[in-house]
Image 1 (cartoon, rainbow, N blue to C red):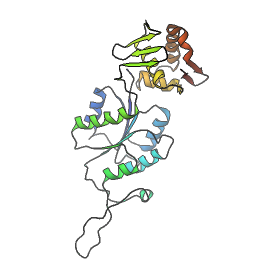
Image 2: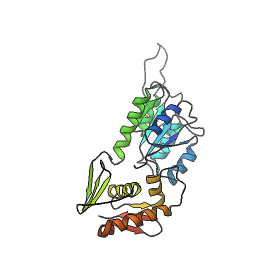
Image 3: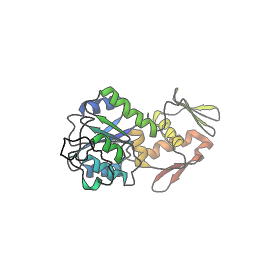
Image 4: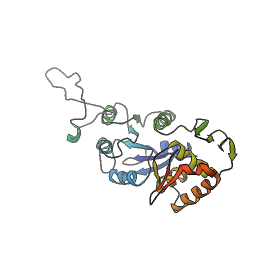
Length: 255
């Protein structure tokens, strides 16, 4: 089925190794990066469905990196933050975030002034995280929360029947009907058709489709996409008219 690609950014992956392994067992493609600059390059070059950010990477504070993402062209990418513990406090407030965070003032010993404070968890939410987990949290709960975030932004594949005009995709039986007549398609052709029907009127580049269907670990030519779409069009008959070629870029499904 469709590959969901997750980018995990952290200083190291000692604490998160089990979480990453569980995500992979769930069928997700997980790529890791220890540097925020490298992570931004990956986001620019690849299709990322979900970004997981630890509170620090080897070259940046996780909060600063999140703000950078939210102020970029990728501001709508869903983000899950991960902290050591829900009660972890920021030791100092980066000046770049001074206008973004709402601090609290707790009680202080008599004669002393309480410094403003905020937890990493609350700070991540205020900067724009969609969810915040902790490394001391139950792993199954962490995975469930990550999957919940993904469901909000990725088309629901559990929907049994997807219909656009005369084209019907049955997700349960992995079958395709056009005008009520079933046509035989391969798994990759089915996945391509699913992506097209789920993204109408949107230009989909060859690299996007390659990573969406074949995943991060496929290193073949983007022209593989052209071969599969040519075969799919041949099977679709007159309905192939909905799949338009966008010169030098990729394809667009216009129902």
